[in-house]
Image (cartoon, rainbow over all chains, first blue to last red):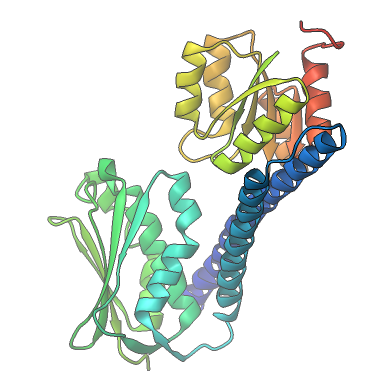
Length: 221
Length: 124
């Protein structure tokens, strides 16, 4: 029992660190772009001071680019805030489709660094489950991280959320290299099994169709 | 002096290139290591300003690939984080001439480009 929580606790810190590093990197990029656009505006005004005309369309375009980056930063910071609050409660009713979409958004940069695209297929109707939100996020991330490693040449991972009799399934599909002998031994390992056990979840690896299915109960005990 | 700026953020490198051109530096840009390798195969550049963390081919790997084929090229690294570890990796281990932290100060970049090329006002 203690070992299980040691494994989960250690991974929780690593997960927090990884996501924070990714988010801060994105914010730095946004700031760098705003800085260059503001600098370009300054260059134009300096040139105008020397008698060169200012093009209103160019100025309008630059203002639009800055506004776009501010909106991008706002989205990143909203995600960061949602992520920070996921540790607030150890048992909470969540919209599973929203959690999966959120995790895909949070994983966008790590996926992009690996050249992988993430496609989210939302459920037809909202699916509410009562679970531990932070542990669920770690487990989705672990499945996704592995899925990205075995998606093969297609370089796309599809995440689909559906209702089932006991609760819901999250399916990670298009994992073309899942049946490779070397891939099969990687997953699930102690950590994923410990997380699944804590959430009352089940991980099924379907090598023949290249899918991992994460089954979640409607309500954790 | 001909410079290529390489970063996966297109708006960043295209704007930086335009600002460098106002300062008398001929600058081009690429948004991936692969695109940079294609451009370098066609056009000769003196310096590459490269983001360390890029999808697929990172800055350090790109430098290794380019240095083998184009030994005359010099490199300046950019990074979002200015940790000492990044600095050591970038300058000492990977052998870049200089290391810039984002957001980039255009005057610092201009100055460093000129220094790296030993540019004293006229074209080298």
